[in-house]
Length: 104
Image (cartoon, rainbow, N blue to C red; front, side, top):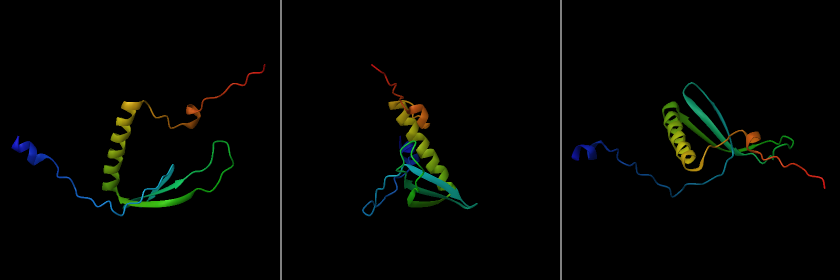
């Protein structure tokens, strides 16, 4: 038991007192050979409307080691969500329920 306790990773202390939460439904990933740049914004367009400029509001820059850890953490979180609630379909056209018009 003592060996198991020594092998457990120590939690990293974090300070959340200055955290700002922002909603995003759009992201763009670009980068350099040394780092990834992930921009987030809000896409206010409804399917079928004319294109509107998406205002980017947040930029996160990470090295590839952090990006790999983030990718793994996000993958695990999505897998747990899908296990609990079902498949997340990312193709909007496959999610849309088409209403058939009926004439009386």
